[in-house]
Structures are given as structure tokens and as C-alpha cells.
Length: 257
Image (tube, rainbow, N blue to C red; front, side):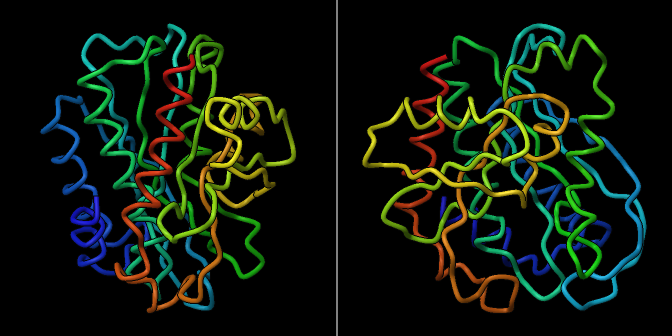
């Protein structure tokens, strides 16, 4: 997984409407298609604003929606996601190439051993806030949720966001958003040994969009580190073992369904 983190971070900062984001999306699409997933781009508009003190333009971004062959979005399934964009100051190795790399590894594993409950993978654009107060964020996941049909919304039994999952910690944070049911976070923790995870509340990733729509959701990751949203967010801060431990937590939950 470290190789994927390095490849994505080498592209540089990836504001959601930038050419660098488009290059990262092309790379990830190739990674997913190479292990048998069907990928389509879902386009949406993003407003201009300020991202951590830097003015960023408005424009079009994309979510990457990946499905296994035969997938039916109106039948019961779960979503695993990670955001692909970064703030303008950061190459985003931890935030969030680590989450993307782990999702791609889960994609490989799922093609070899499909889960009993079908899985859709989504790489979201424009998760990062575009105003100083952070009140306008998760644009890609909100767009994804709002475009679901009633049947697709009912069929989405849960969503797990992988965000900042590579900085080494004593455990894997499993966070609910605090504004909806915490049932999925409890289920994720129950599927792994108690010593592996810790409980937390976090409202700063794509799981909040699903939780706001009444869909059980949780986030894996959020260990603090000094390079957060800065030029110091480089591959050397990412631990392969922490990513693999996070992936194992997600895998245990999928196998429990």
C-alpha cells in the first residue's frame, strides 16, 4: 500500500477541481479496473472558496464509483469510501492517500473473496472545506447521497469512510458522526478484538453526509499528527502496518455482515 501512497502523493496537492485531482482520479481508476472493478465518474459542481487560508476556484469535480460485476444498487449493499482531494498546502499522503490506498487494497481482496453483502466503493471529491469555518465541506459525498433514488437509499445498509488511516497509533479510531445512529460504529468495533479499536466522535469526513440522510455510517482513522494540512503531510508519516491494521478492521466488519 505504501507504493500507492507514494504514487498519489507524488502528484502533489489535489484541490477538487484541479488538473492534479484529475490525474489522481485517472491513476485510481486504473488501479481499481486492474483488479476487476467497473468505475464511472460522477461529476458535480464545487463552489469557489477558501481552503485553509488559500483561495480556491469553483468548478467541476468527480466522485469515482466502483462496482463489482453484476452489482445492483437497488439491492442491499454497503459503501466503503475515501476522499481523494487535499487542501492546497499538502501533498496529502496521510490525508488522504492512506485512505484511498487502503480502499484499493480492499478492492483487490473483495474480488478474491466477495463479501456476503455486496460492496460499492466510492472515492469522493471535494471533501475538504472551502471556507475558513469549515461549514461547507464533503461536497462529493453530499452530492452522491442526494442523487440516490429512494430504492438506492433504502438499499444502502451502511457506509464506512476511511480518512487519515496511516499515521501510527495504539489503536484504530472508529468514529461516529454524533448526529445520527452510532450502530455501525458499534458493529465495526464488535467485529474486531476490543484491543484493536477505540471509540470516538468525528464530524469531519464523508460519513457525515450519509449519517445526515439517515444511513448508518462511521469513520475509520484520525490519529493526530504534526503535518496535518501542511507540506509535511508526506509519505514518511504513513505507516504501512497502520494501514493494514485499518484494512483488517474494515475487512472483519465486511466478513461479519
